[in-house]
Length: 355
Image (tube, rainbow, N blue to C red; front, side, top):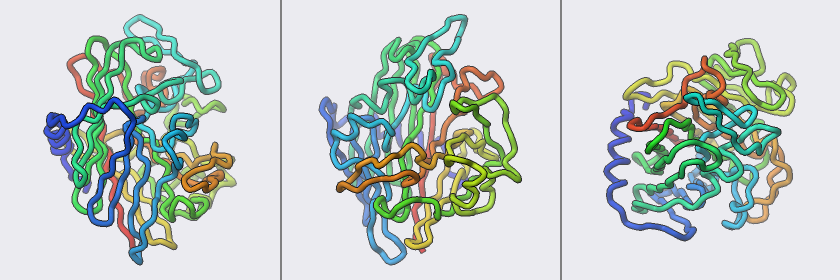
């Protein structure tokens, strides 16, 4: 899997994106289904509504947290399943300077900008450009100059597609039209491999193939340092239960991990492996991006979800592959600036198994 070609995935997305089958002006729900693997997507926020996969005994469960109706997503403050941007994660002080100009952004998180502002990409209606039920769905959003304070027009595409019988790929692309601008898209899906109604994820075992993190201050803004995880509560280089060192990380995990040996050029690299013992389900994640935000849903607080089930704190985990948070204000971090004529590309591949 580490040898999957990034160019191969991009070519697939380009080819299917050209086959325009629908210009969706209204909010809809679209099902992708192959065998016993089912994914539901809405064009509101290009959001993942559900992922249904079998456990080791063949029992099917929805392993994604979410709301019972689309109205829940319109009033969502936890970003269930959303495709977030133009810049995912946080921008310190809700501003940045680019090419001599300072851009002021909405301060929607303790004086900082979170997930693109008060109305980011997870809060808009996308256009469905291609949809084949047993294959893929491609959605497009055109972001205007000055939207949420960001410079320039940007055309964004995301494709959710099956690869083989048990892999789901997310291919994100964005093209600035007329100005340089920061771009950092992320999929904000909450996972619980025991099933979304099974309780907390503290007994899930996780391995993060990342030897370093980007430490943060009390408002979760990176300090600019890059610190080794060895010997700390952030060390998941070997698989262990998520809750095993919660005493060393008060409040849970919400931090960017620096992925080791991230694929360069044509290839993607493994970022994480998650396992749940009762169901036997395993999720493996690959990406071409340098970071992954590991978040243990610390802010969930009796959120009413699908079927009226109440999601409590730690009910799900997020693995948001990404550029580093607040990169626009830290020159030592990998740049997120994309110029006209360049293409932002972000690939995620999930593989689901059970044994």
